[in-house]
Length: 198
Length: 237
Ligand SMILES: [Zn+2]
Ligand SMILES: [Zn+2]
Image (tube, rainbow over all chains, first blue to last red; front, top):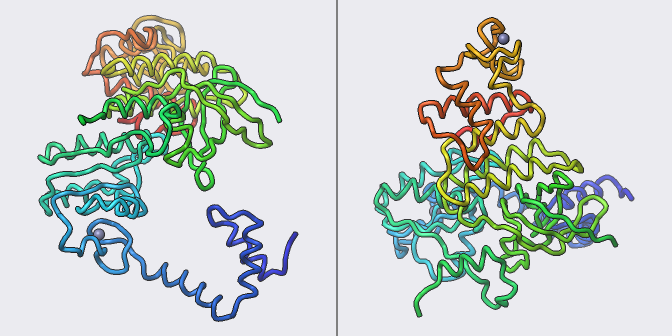
């Protein structure tokens, strides 16, 4: 069913968001119709201001509202270790672990021969320049444990090792809290190869 | 509520919705199959790494209106080692890309499937022959019915003086049949291509590094010409 044009326009826009179906879009649109005018305006303005104020960090390509992101500006962070991730969202996930005190570099994706994405489309050149400029001694590759993420990690190892840096990869293993008999062969095989002394 | 069984090698997958992926497989019986794997992008997915590219899997599918949904997966063969070497994973990537282009849905593809399975096994065993991808392209062309003439002239069937290659004519040409568009092949290349095309993928002829680049270039452009589509970076490297 079609609604009056202004309502239908909003429903159509909302329905294009990830995870929002037609039904939810309708519910949200009617919710927005009934809230205070001021609340609706704040929502609209926050969308616009996010788009205009957020940019990529000049150094690591994380999202930020200034030239450099808060992590790059933080002098307590250890510049000698660098964690390489595919997307800015991945930084948030690693930060939540509170296990990493170095800096980041966002590649902007992963190598996918099948999708036609090669190293040239990623921020590899910027990474090499940073390793030399910032005297990085260890690069931790935190790309996804997929064929694309693995391929990217292998490429990085080949690219960076000649520069004299240590290149490590996040270990693959069993999900904490899971049952061993649910693990697939690939995951379990890697967990075995990456086992550690106790 | 119809359940069906199938098996195939995973060619690729792409994100679908919030946490799902559409997995594209090459099935010997059904050709190219697309199916939804629900929740596979979550780290705790029960599918784990089973639906990663190159896995040969046995599936139980729930038939849907548009896309089938994968309800169970069992790994038949996983090829874990080829993923740990850049050259091998790129070669495997090139192979699945080609089959993703040539395979059709709902069309049996036993030969294409066997070609891929043998090629992945060869890659899994150790460092590959440097012209494995070239041989694969020539064999894939043959599987889809456009295998180039390499042992004899595509024009007259002559077996000597085959120094040119014509994409349009479908193979090598002798000096009498040569057309203006046919490219010149360097000495030995005709024989090398013919040997690569004829040998089993796991027993290719001795490598000739001086002919590698040209062999790949001719084979790639030939396949691109007949598929009317450019192949990606992995086939180029
Ligand atoms: Zn930064
Ligand atoms: Zn002829």
